[in-house]
Image (cartoon, rainbow, N blue to C red; front, top):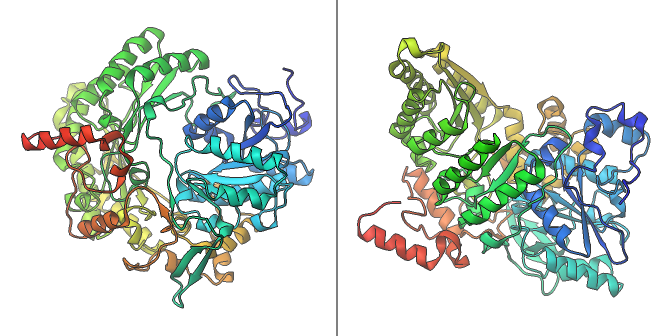
Length: 637
């Protein structure tokens, strides 16, 4: 098949940074003949090419949709500001990479929504495509705009801009949705008729078919469907058989270096740990593992077809994968022969992990990462981190003895119940780890000072976590906490070995509004975009003053969405979605957090979160019985 004519002329490509972002035709990309009845689907990640090309979810859906004979899925990403400016000046419509044809001509535009700070980029994509920004203004000639991903679990701030949201994991319902579209198209049905039928499919939410009313204090009075036969509650879609789920053996290989420039192998989905701040740990319950033999096969195939020189194991908590040792030993043997690097994120730092890393990493160049999240044990218990100071220090000691001298520590500021003493403990713990290096490594074996990089982000409460009711700090409170942390570090004996970094407070506050916002936030997003806000996730482009003006002009209070205390019986904007864990379970975990009580992980004791109804993964009857027997015998995880 001939390479299509490029949408951008040479003189345009020569004016922009990294023109390879826009030319398509990468190894592994898929092109199809445009036959009658072919559904054209544009899959979008609303950020720059290097970020979007690193996202595993899009790779999986791209592969899956293109396996359907009647669907051609192509890719589109946010043009960088240099090209954005030229496209507007010269009226160049946004195009898909594979065909180089305008997005406006497609049947579907599917947008994965991974991060709140990308919301204005969604409007950039629609705007450059020539698709009306508001769903209510679209006609039968426009693509169906469908959203998915973790932020779709509170779709309300974006309700005005999407025709449809897919709630849950994308592998289960897209075939049914495509079949419905084919049927409606053959019957000449309207856009609204298709959306009405789609809203009855599992996991599908059409915002236009629901109405919200509010109390005088701004909280939600009611949320209900306005069409007959539309569900009041939408249950997430979940892959129950991950071992046989679709996975890309021939992923697209980018022309330029991207953020995750390697083969990615998803070893499991979900997490047993139950950290109370973590949204992904709740949304992807129950934990499901992929079969190790399947992973071995795919690892070899993907390395062969991509030419990548690194493979990464993807998981929220890789150490909890039951076949980790078997898989890693296999990869070490195979990758060692081929000089392939192995990346092991999300590992607990224990003897096994350090032994593995010493085999697969260049010790002199690499650093180890710990995520205590909180400095004090009291606060780690509040957030149910399940990590003691003893475990952290033992891991650091083993790491230093094994040749590492650089350690990254990640903490959060502004967690519920946090005190000045908890903040000071961030510095104390960092100092203890630095001191451990000098106690562990003899002077003659040191290659200079150790490096402890302590980084703090600001806590943002997220929907479907036990902390969804928690007040968020103001910008001023966040900055005060960062100053307290920096001051405490300067008071430590080993301060010269500790470097401190912190996140932007302005962006964290906006993220908090967008995360727990309702439909009234939509006009603010639209106004901010029209005033030049996009690429908000990139510090150099974030315009906080513009956002604050837009909130003021729309008459919305920032504090209403961030720092106020929510009552447990309040209707939350996302309550119409069933994410698999019950609200009662989240309430119980919230109460336990305020009392500093911990909850055991799923391998030790079931907490009755509600995910057992799926009867898969860690929640199968056989595994529940095995855990029960182990508990009777005094066994652990």
